[in-house]
Structure formats: C-alpha cells, structure tokens
Image (cartoon, one colour):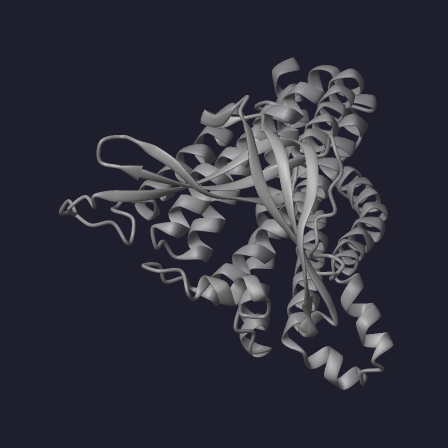
Length: 392
C-alpha cells in the first residue's frame, strides 16, 4: 500500500516538473529602469478613530442629497506611523452600502499616499478612510475554528489542519503565482489539486488502503468534473467574463489571462472539497466494516460502500446546490422584484455559469462514489487474500 501511494506521488512530481517550469513573470523588464527623483508610496494601515468633525456639506444632485466631508482624527495602530495621531478624510454621499459611518473608538483601515524623495525624506500627501477593520473578528472566528477542531478531533483534527495548510500553500504559493506567470489554468489547476488531494489524504489517513481508495475516488470525480466543465462550458458558450471581477482582469497591465480556463479552474476548485469529503466517507465506512467483520466478501463491501455513498450523495449534492444558491441570493431577489422572464434568467451567462458550476460539481461527487467503493472493496479483498495465504 505504501509503495502504491509513493508511486502515485512520484508520478505527480514528474507531472509537476513538466508543467511547472519557473519563468520570468510577465511584465518584468530585464533591464533596470532609471529611478525618478521622487516616487509615491501607497500604504494601508490600521487606526482607531479619536474624533470626527464635519468640515463641509455640499449638495449633490447625482445622489439626490448632499456630500458630507469629514475630518477624522485617528491614532495609527500599524506600520511606520504606528502611535502617531493623523487626520484623515472621510466622504459621506448618502448612498447606503458605500458610506462608512464612523464614531469614536471605531477601528478603520487608512489609505495613505506618501511622497519619498531621493534623499530618503518622506512626506504624507493624502490620508483617506478606506474601510472598517474586520480582520480582528475574522481572527477570533479562525481561533474558534482551530480550537474546536483540535478539541473535538484531537489527533485527526491536527491532521485536518495540516491538510488545510497544504491546500492554502498549494493555492497561494503554486496556483496563483503560476497563473500570474502565464501558465495554462486548467492543467495547472488539475496538477495542484492532485497534489493537494494526495498530501491531504496522506495526512488524514496515512499510507493506508483507506487513503489510496479515497485518493483514487477523488481523482476520478475531479477528472470527470474537469472534462464536463470543459465540454458543457463550450456547449453553453461560456466566455468566463460573466462578472465584473472577470472583466477587470482584462485590463491588468502586462498580463493576459485565459478567462475560460480560469472559469473551468474555479469550477474544479469549488467541487474538490465536497468530492474529497464523500470519497473519504465511503472509504472510511468500508474500512470500519472490514475491521468489524474480517470474513465479509469484497462485493459485500462494495455494496455497503455504495449504500453509504448514496446516503451521503443525497445530502452533499444538495449542499453544493444550496451553497451556490446562497451566493446568488441577491440576484434571485432582483429577478423576482423585476419579474424577469425565466428564459432571460436561465440564458444569462452569470446564471448559466453558476448552473454549470453546481451541476458539474455534483456529477463529480456522484461519480466518485462507485469509484471509491470499488477500489476500497477490491483492496480489502486483496488484503484478506494475502492474510489467508500468509496463515497457510
């Protein structure tokens, strides 16, 4: 078993070395540029609000209201100006969702522009309130998550966190830099997700039959989802430019992205977690059944795994659909409010993209069930046969 997993891992490393060839990032120049006499720095720093003064109020017909300019005295909490008291500007337009209504003791993010001269002298040019500080709340929520997973999961919880760390490293240290360097999105994404799957399964279950069955089941579902995403994305003529963020990538200077490839890559990334979950659940169930009854036959194990998979399938496919529906809830309310025709809704690229995303992920999840059950049942039968021959 250990040898098989090592062979799979070696094959992945060979694929990695072929596809991932480090190169010079797009937009970088090989010749040094002449340094200007003055350069401008953009900083984002945390601060706490001390005082707020309204300095002007101007009528603005575009908003059918007035613009209020506020002078906000703040104490900086991070960066090179930490501890200093500065004055920032905050503009209220009367538009809900855009304005940042402040009061004393609120923590905010400042946008600071700094002029730096050749002699090293720095001077602040502008300071604006950019947003509220939300990272503190996110940090506490993250600590709660880590604490609960360790307390309840114990050793397995720690292994799960290690798998999560592998996923984060794979995405932020391999996938995103690779895309920025101009790599083809779909092959690179599949390569990274295969590596994430292998390492996560090894962390969670070790070099075991359960890990191998779950890995192969996950890869089977993942590759199926990748093929379907490409095929039906082409049939539905999805361009990958359904959202404002997608279109903004077209205007990034010095970079050119394969937008359809990014769309398919996003579909695979969104589906992987659920597919891994189902595959490990089926493999783990078969492993526990085998431990409880060593005389059970392989086909009985496969049947038991299929039964477990069917139960999981019903709820997990629902989970995927609900997750995507939750993200599109404001759009659904807009459709109802403006009484849009169903033919317009279904054929809108944004909605069509989400439908393809949800259904492709669900199909990949469904396909991983029989693959995992068959592999886990066969491996269990093979190990039972080896045990009998050794006892003889």
